[in-house]
Length: 421
Image 1 (tube, rainbow, N blue to C red):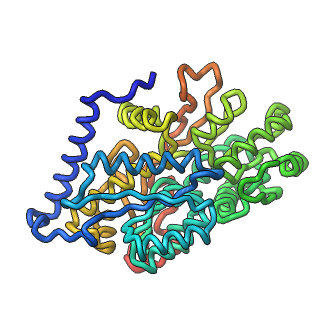
Image 2: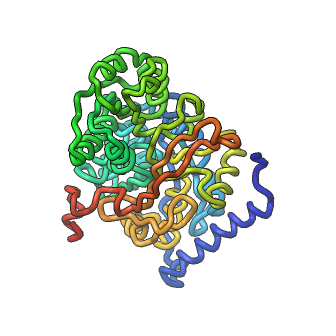
Image 3: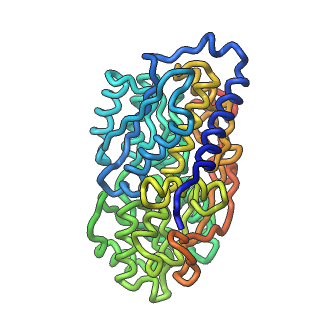
């Protein structure tokens, strides 16, 4: 099925990038070329990711390649200067991520850091980026704190967040009779934010949370957690985790027969297509999730995803697709601004809409949230799947202004200062 992309398609993609570049340039007037300013005569992008841990499949090498694809499609240069991509494995540790990001900004002359999976890592990195007045575009991490109490003038939360996941999966499960919940939660910022945001949704629907249990990142054995969830009698067992932890938790629930009994349902609040692939449809079938991207949505997503498949050997996750889109948007903003100065580029990124295979009419708000449509999806049964990687049914399209926390609900200081709160 996946035969790659023809020379014609490659040409069309490069032509698209060139047209977009010209359009962005026109928006800022004809004098950009004469006033263009690129620091150090190079634009350097750092992909700070998980290359070997729990999130390596949904980020890692795939995120690095997605960023490289965006740079290649853009033409490899911006305002006549070369674009370089570097990457590092932060091992899902905030202290390592902090050391790397400081070194990148101080000595490697990195202009923008992206991916930044793991919420504790992201919270540390955006703080350093703000201190250094450099740009951080978060795709891998989900905590809604990034655009709320921990927002910064130099960070963008691009792909998704825990508020959107709660709005999609949490609301749907609550409406379908899930009026009692028990959470199995990853014990760090992401899991804590996700549990809180879903709890708010459940309570708003007059439901109850009967309890929760925390587990460490990269937990190998979920047996004790499943026994506690089973004993709670909750109708819904909410898995406030992701990546390898979500895969292991779903497997444990299957082994304990929790779903088969008919008394309890599993809400895998953040599960990506790579996780479904690892589980297999016989185990994953029926699970709900909320995502910002699915490779098989339309011709545009399929074209890009097949190119990605040719390079990586698997279909892209939401995070990997978002890294491509975010990188392209960043480069378009530099071209339109005539400089890679962070303040000027951030202003331009907020002005320009995001229009590509990942998002249509996406917009970056004052709080750094990139607002775009999200999708409630359900994993197909084996009988429904007709070809490789044909895993998801899109059940509901959630408009961006409904999926994400409104500015009126935000405590971000930037919102108050902008007068849009």
